[in-house]
Image (cartoon, rainbow, N blue to C red; front, side, top):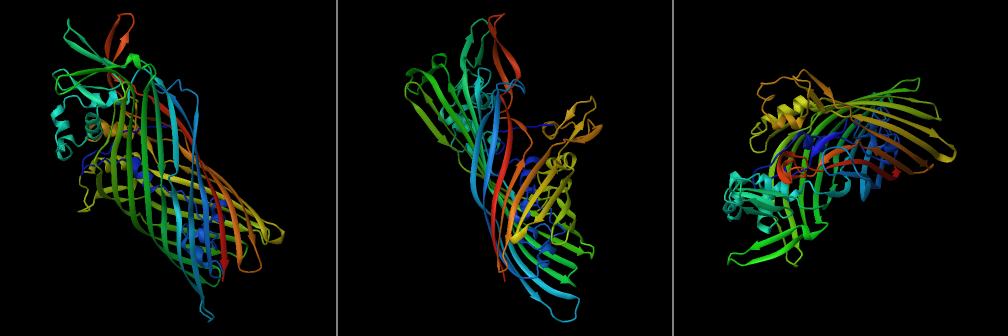
Length: 579
């Protein structure tokens, strides 16, 4: 089942107001381990293995398994590849796919472990302290889609959403401090640079891509898209989550390892969305400018662009405890439990755009930068693993991990209370459940210190949808748009998981010398599920009725939709030294 979302300016222009959602919570808290080339090649099925610095973030006991101190660094490339198809309206009849890729350099793992051996008869044979920076999230994503439409326009949608507001409100110097305008950041910017304009006497607006007509017999205006627009939508996301791990672990008799980690995740996330529209035949888009002195200029619309930029800087803290047991038969068992992470989030956002006309005039502008701070609690996590070592030939390992997303909560930054987050917290608890992860990895040792590795992993989606009283499917967005379920006027008959899953495959090579040096190489491919989104919301508009030879109002006019399929490739090289 494809997730359907709407990309819109959910964050307002003005300071002090923001809109958090369940999908923001998923973005901030979803874990996608990268690790070292060793752990990545095994798809991070390392809960019961340990010994490598890429395993410490998954099981704190892993640092005590190695009988030596070590340092390693893992540079790598993150490569996002996306294919997108455009549909002018609704969710069918998609055009041909277009591709977009993005490559970024990263250092997903670097760390050191210091082992202090105890040569007494005590069961505790060694104490290990480790400091590791490891990547648990990669936001690298880029998409580009486009097509032709004479049905709807981003700028017409902005105009429609502004109906009822006075032009004086938009033009006032204090507009950004007016709480009644907090949800109209895109409209304020669009009005000030001429992407939308007013008409009539009832505070109505039309976009720069629309034509206005007036019927004297009915005394009514209608505005519509007079010709074909070339529409292009691009989305660029980037950022990482790096956990700083302070790890303590103990080796008991070389067959029981226990570890504790305090983790401090540092996350950066940026999302830039751009919509560009160009008139295919400008002659169909006449525009008349009336200036303050009464003079008028006639021209034609050429092109316009709107951009929304959003960034989040996130810091947090959590604790994790784990253990690994080694049996004489070659079987190894491991488990680890992680507390929910307490995050502090600082969001910033702004709007910008431009518009150009055929007479050479053009306008551009940007909004003030908005900022909002709040707290967030991430899911509870537990890992379980089993592996079998086939002597000097290799090993096979299987991991299971669960994350309980129903415990996620937003809270006020200053007081720590629920504040204005009551409805979204209730919705997250209702529409989020447990995500299950399965990871499988294997290693085969070869002569001369070489080995080959391979792995597979699957992560299920925690998102749920409800079955309403009339059999309709109710998603998080429907719930948030209506008070019926929140206030108890309607009840779900059932809740089901959406069924989406993220799959990945990996492989790699390892090389160990008789001395201190070792090296590993890995390639991991993550196959993301397809998604469908709309670059702006549905709105009421007019459409030409050929049989009646007139324009008629159409409620809930469908905006374009875009189908995206995306893969993420990580190429990693680990260089390490034992001492």
